[in-house]
Image (cartoon, rainbow, N blue to C red; front, side, top):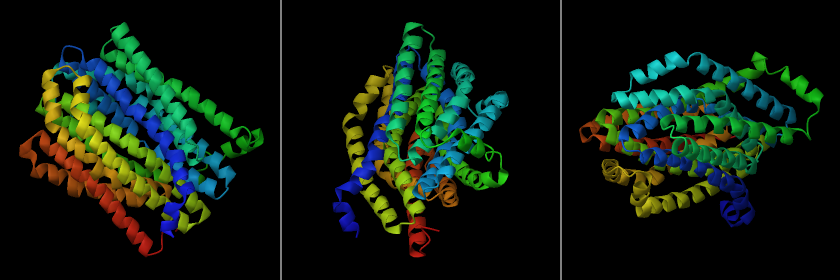
Length: 448
């Protein structure tokens, strides 16, 4: 049966109808980060770049530990679409936006203690910490837009609509790049200019996203439907399954962000040049992650719909076809960074010390497309199945049993240890999720 699925062009088209637009739009996100880095990286001192790296790391940690807003929304909406449960589709949108707003308000109210706590654990020069704090104080006010944008993106993907999120992300990142150049190069605002550009882009993206969602729901729901379903947003019984799923994905995402944060904090201890070099390479990692996420998004939406339709055969086909294409893309990425990685580093920063350090650790980055491929695909699979507990357990295992022990084992190797641990962590994520999936498949629990 799987052989026939591979030979059926329609099956491949279903994957790429979602994956290709999301790959193209997702790549714009790390490319934006590269523009930020390139603009700041050509200023005369490395502490500007290091300050943006640390400030961005703190804001990204706060926002992306809440990425469950996108993930859970995608999986649940896709299942509701597969089951033709139209009231649930709209109810989930409202519930997700409500929770996003509450979390954004909490972040803004607690920004001062959150900032103090985050920077307490960062050991860097006074100038690095000064510019990191400057970035944070501006960018944190984009929290409402950033979190609601996650919801809108997840909802549109769950609706099997990849073109709208592509348009949304491309518009937002294009605006961000233009404002980067205007604020930093034109107005000479420095680090503050980068932060203001990102904040403005988040709110412009929110306006575009709300307009797209409004146009999507308008033909299918009356004002009475919207009023009736909005009353259920505050129903704790209706919110309970959504909150429980979000809890598990939150813990999973927190573990993932711990690895990125730990790498930045340890890099700061090793010096401004090291943390700046790691910042450059982490943007490459984001290119890998966001492009592979295109396939993960596709399998999320397809698996969720297959679950809603109670179709085990289509579910398996979606997974194995996605694995096939993910393997191809991982090899292509490895070759691209092997051939052009050094050249890209030279384009991003003109600081020779940062170039030297980045090229020293580039080989570890080149391996990541292979070590991370399974993790990206099966993250999507388990999101589509809305199995947050298994994702949580896999990530805790990968962090505590693999990442930190491997880093400790090679700690005397300095920054090499961080990149070895990152590769080991990525590989452990994929292998553990694959093992859990096979266990569920043997026990015939995939549709449970």
